Length: 482
Ligand SMILES: [Cu+2]
Image 1 (cartoon, rainbow, N blue to C red):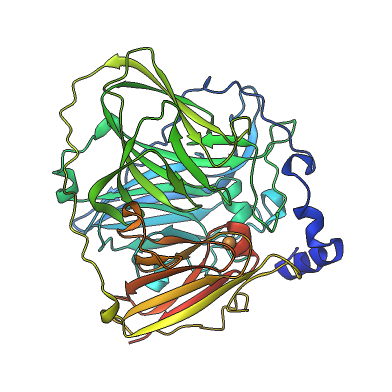
Image 2: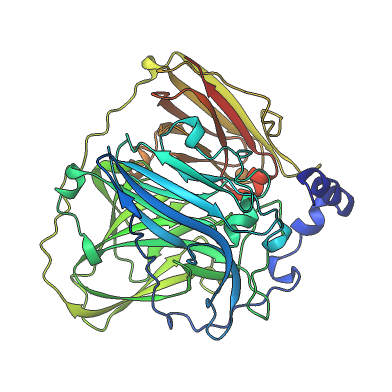
């Protein structure tokens, strides 16, 4: 079995820059998936029905296993799925009501991409006991089952579940191990935002396929990116929409790619929330950047467009001829009444102030040059080392400084935080609510965040959410102590 350390040796021998310097199109065996853009209908991941419910809890069963998916028409792609679906089935949860997810690991000892079949399932964005968090080495071995119980005692938010196994999160997620977990509550339901068939999740991912339609994963330590764009597992899909408002729950579920979302007709849209739930008020923008693991709750109003209009969702971080430019297309094809409302006040966000913090911790992000490792404060992840011990109910400020030449989206488990500054300036209004991932800009960029460690003691990871950076050691952990 290849360990990360073996891999590091290998990378050292061939020279890190050997991989890095090559345009991704020259990496072995990749081809463009030959699908005409906007020819396939958008997949909507199925909502999973609980296997049982009681007074406090909804119980779900999920099976992790290899299966085939028809991603490219006429070809069968080997994937790692939850219950046969990629992305996995969506869990609908309510704040204050528990969810118990039982995962059976049906993977072989060695699975796709040569990765070990042992997994650990993390509910990203969850505030839960450390025992339920999917610690990187708390494996579910092949053939075994375990149940994670989530209290959901937090603000409603767009969460997602994905593998978090030590050193192999990148390939496990690339081959399919991710699904959505959307939480709501009575307050949010009463807002009369677009709902039902007008509330649609959009999970954006990039992948590479070989000529036989099989996924290609190269463990590029700079971050694995693909030349084929998928939304909800469909290559550059279309969605028929009516002349009205829609609520899109957008996830950047990619291993490494950043997106700057914009509409092809230049029209604005509203950001009503991000990772930690609703903003205090909607923010109107014409573009929004999402790093891996960032989520955006968007309202797009097609009401003023004529039937027959097509609008593309684009990624304007790349040029118009780049394969990663066109994400999906909305086809306005019907009229509809629209009684939904986007209120000018959404939900109170209780703001922390600097003076509440009992301490500030400083973290440096580095790596990617020689030696093939990404580090936090000069160190790679060690499960036996704890780098911060906040006390229960302490409020702390963490300042990240990025010494490398790539942006790093840093994700903390356990807590939702607020951004104080990015490069010394207050965040944009879109980023002024609750977050669990923050982009720390490259080349000595900084980000300051503030959070309170409530309810649960124990060890929780924090790491870069470029999954190959995480797998290549850019992860640390804090321990909340009594
Ligand atoms: Cu990173």
